[in-house]
Amino acid sequence: MDLDLSPEQELLAETVRGVCARYADLTVVRELEDDPLGYSSELWSHLGELGLLGMSIPEEHGGSGMTALDAAVVYRELGRALSPSPHFVSCVLSAGALQRAGSEVQARWLPAIADGSAIVTPAWLEPDGGFGPAGVTLTATADADGWRLDGVKRHVAFARAADRLLVLGRAPEGVTLFLVEPTAAGVSLTQQMTVASDTQYRVELSGVRVAPADVVGVPGQGWAIWDRVMHDGIILVAAQAVGGARYALEITTQYSKDRKQFDKPLAAFQALSHYMADAVTAVDGAETLVWEAAWAKSMGRNIERLAPMAKLFACKTFRDVTAMAQQIFGGVGFTVDYDIQLFFRRAKALQLSWWDDRYLEDLIASDVLDPVSA
Image 1 (cartoon, rainbow, N blue to C red):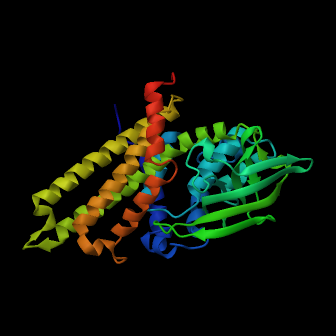
Image 2 (cartoon, rainbow, N blue to C red):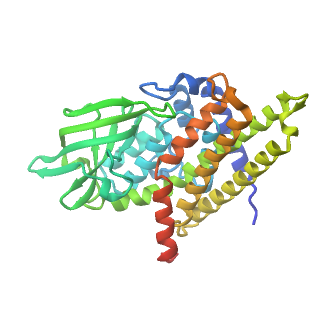
Image 3 (tube, rainbow, N blue to C red):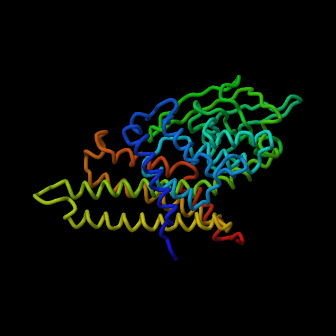
């Protein structure tokens, strides 16, 4: 099995790495912590020029239609750079939902997402609701003029920068998707402070009116759409985690060579060298699992088990590697003067986001005990 990247994929990786280094290096990442918008407009425009905002969107809607393998290459580099952008929520999740279920009217959003002129972000999680369909309790009531939405959403990424929120609500038919303007009457946004200092909002909806044309798909079938989009998306989250873990390991090994204690570098201490040996083994294993999941997706194979496995293992690896790195850096690793704390905090946030360990383990166990045929 050949796991080497093709020349085209190598060029793609180099291009994304170069753009991130130029327009959103770790200095920019620091500046954008707890920022109300949370992303670099320069990075966003250059990703658009490269066609990377439309990588998950078909060419007939203005996208580039990349394979899942190519997309994983992109996300590995975005994770390496801790890229602050709404790419995942808009170009992957929201675009995926609109593509799968949107009407012709809603499909007009896909070209705008692909060229970066519009941002759409999901409003999914609710207070104490969990990750499953039962956690969606925001009420969607139909009347003669359309729909009325009432409820609260949390952890809505880049909500203030978004042109539309993709809201999961519970209609009498079941979970349903709606497109809502963040500035609509009855919508209020409150920025949340997080361990990663990324840009998230609490969104309260009180009597928010939604036109019939802004219902995404068929009422009651929203969770089936969302679940499918999430399975595709978490492969890229796993690739992002691998990129972050590998870079965190690189700066840690370099620090262990440069920093001396008792007249020898830290890397010369056997216990620390064994930590790093275990770490590189885990990172390589996580990357292999990500490639397998992305390959299966590209080939149209079943990913019900592979996608959760990749996200579970890659994010745990990212968390474990950065925790080990903090031990090697010692007390200075927790100070803002060192970059490792950026990766440490984001690793935990990524592990908790977009289906946490417990939910992923439930998905994997369900497939192991009652496997779905490929």
